[in-house]
Length: 289
Image (cartoon, rainbow, N blue to C red; front, side, top):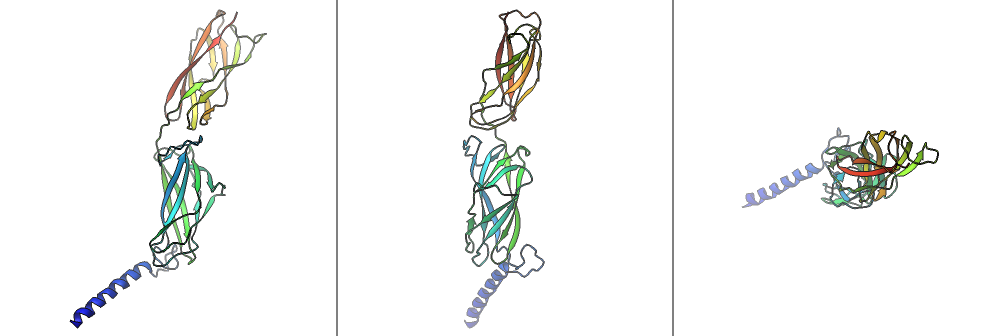
């Protein structure tokens, strides 16, 4: 009986000793963990708290999409045996894929400083700050925006890790319309539009949806018997904000000689976006005698 009791007690000691060594390991060659604590502080996860367009329309899909604004927080874990205190982190701004990075509304200079509450053993804590960035057009669908983060605590533990956000394909349901074209100039003596006139026309499109639209362009179709030349074709409007008009774009048009007064010359436009969507719009050029 004594041997049985003594063996059980010895077995318990062996398990405890093994567990202790797992969390405290002497390894002077571990430059990321100079005190030799295996996993005394570790990155846990980055969680998206909000994703929205420039029009503040929250998509609530929990994904990172091109041109979106992303808000997130970082969590770290304590797999060690003691509470870790005074936890700080420095997060590096990604080399691509993210722009307009802010922390609690303040723009950092290449680095993001984060702070955390004290973390009990086996627990996870989230940073006190809210991080915000805009997905920039220098990255494509299915690529990853990579962040590097360096963690430090009061014991001098120092761990560097990386995390990333995958950019998912998302096609907003845009709706564009053409605002009233403006005659900017005519080479006719009274500024009218006649046969053989050279005119400049200003075009503006309206984005009536709550999503930012990048690089909207258009192709023109017209009758060569009525218009001698229209340029530039294709035409670019550039980015268009949510629920906003575009910047005005200008085209030059030379009316064919012999077009009779009273003619309304039709011009068709096909608007296109970065996602391959297209919208047909059109306008008329009224010719007078």
